[in-house]
Structure formats: structure tokens, C-alpha cells
Image (cartoon, rainbow, N blue to C red; front, side):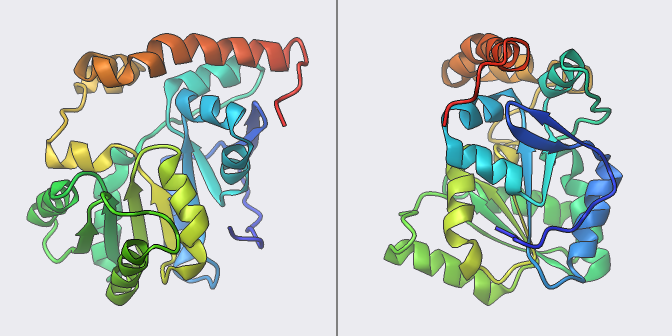
Length: 261
């Protein structure tokens, strides 16, 4: 974790003890580009209601989000929670919405990208889709089905593969909170500039999992689209998790019940 965080000039809000940067997508992409000129590595995180439910119950995950160099809003529920608590978040975006701009900037600047995660073959298919659209893109991949214990032989080989490629940008797709735990345990060993977890990004890019239509994703219903596409896997996250989050928000913000230690 970067101890010498840059003092950024946009506002920050707080929900359930987690800091969220109220920045635009242009500001996020600009900071990622600027990081290439700095000595320190940068961790970029995202939050949605599921993330804050995990952070409520797992203190180390809450600290990870709060100490990330940038933590952006990934869900319309976070915008609603900010409004309920008298705060303001104007922008919400998610990795599938801006991966094309990451690739465009990478080509212009001669940067390399590494995809790590998903089932065997998925990350490579995702990379192939991008290479078809962005000629000259330098990208390498590795699936997420390996022993992720920090000192395991498999994990060491994966870290070695990443470092031999010398990517400036590492994107993870293990799912939450496993991807964040892996970052915490391996950040010091990685020869990179920027790392950010991206959830189901590789599944969407490879077309292994369809993404909800734009009329849903652009109007605050991506969660509903995901639920309809993968009901067995995600019903607890949304049907139970969303009401639970707002109860926790009400209890902490208005009844002043402290967060669990």
C-alpha cells in the first residue's frame, strides 16, 4: 500500500467508514497516466453496495479501500447512499465502460497491460478481442485458477511471469475480496505502476458472460441486469445484500451505531 499518497484536488465522501473519491472518469484516467511519471505505485479500487457490505464485516478490506490511492464509485446504489447522507457523487463508472480508453492511452504511451484472473482461457480471449480492435496493444494474460497463497510455488511463478513482461498496468479479475487480498499480499513483489481489480471485466470482454443492455447499465439498473443474467450466483448479493446495506447505512449514519472493529 502506498504510504505517500498524493494530495488530490477533488472531494472525498465517506460511507460506512470508507473513503470514496468524487472524481470524474477523465480525472481517473488522467491520474493513471500521471502515475507512470511517479516513483510510487498506485492502487485503484472500486466500490459498490456489495463492496461496502464486505467492508462492513471485514476490517482489513475496509482499510484496503480506504487506503487505496483512488477509490471510485462503481454503482448507482453508492450515489443514492451519498445523497441520503447529504453528500454528493456525480459520476459512476465501471471498468467495462472505460477499458477501451485504457487501451487507447496504452498504445499512445507505449504501455503494457497484464490481465490476471477468470477461468483458463477467458482472460486471453478478452485480450484477443481488444487486440482485434486496438492494433499494437501490448497485453499478456494468466488465468486465476492457481494457488494464490503468497509463498506458494504457483503464486511465485505468476508474479515472475508478470514481472518478466514488465507491464505498467495490472488488471485483476478474481472477484471480491479475493482480488484485493492478492494485491495486499503481492504488491511489494510486483514490478508495475498501476494495479486495479476489475471484477467480471474479462468475462464481459470475452463474451463468456453477457452484459446487461445499455439502457439498463446507463440508467442505474446494471445490478438488475446482472441478477437476471446470473440469478443463482448473484441473488444473495442483490436481493439480500442491497436492503442489508441500507439498513447498515441508516443504523450507522442516523442512529450512530459504531462500525464493527
